[in-house]
Length: 121
Image 1 (cartoon, helix red, strand yellow):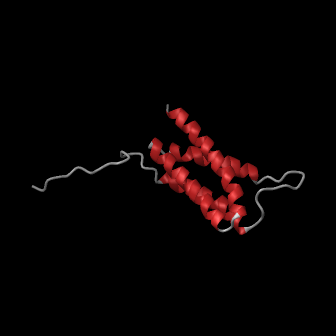
Image 2 (cartoon, helix red, strand yellow; image 1 turned 45 degrees about the vertical axis):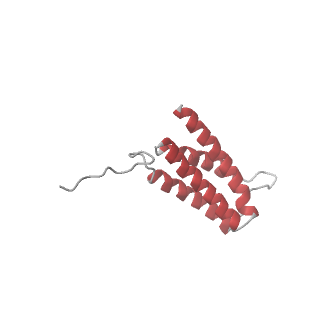
Image 3 (cartoon, helix red, strand yellow; image 1 turned 135 degrees about the horizontal axis):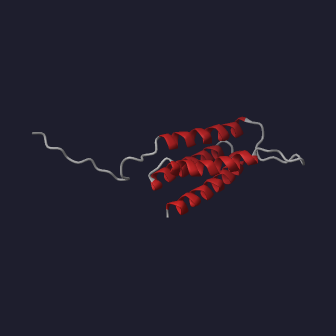
């Protein structure tokens, strides 16, 4: 069951990378914020749903693979990412969000943990 969740998160990460690559350049600067916000929500949501750091890493891996493949220019001269500040912010910001999500993933405690009340005696 967990492997199916990881496969779904990887696919969602790839789709978020593709969509974010198109949106960040089309509607700068709001598209950049939308793309990074969506990536952050996916990475953190994957960590929360699976309760593991792998849950943040799998969609981040799918996102990274797609985004890095889209940076390659074709022989015809076509490209998705122009050499500009928005593209670099999207690439580096997405990678930083992936690292932060994987680092801060709450793996030791339940999702909605309420601390037990201790009596002071």
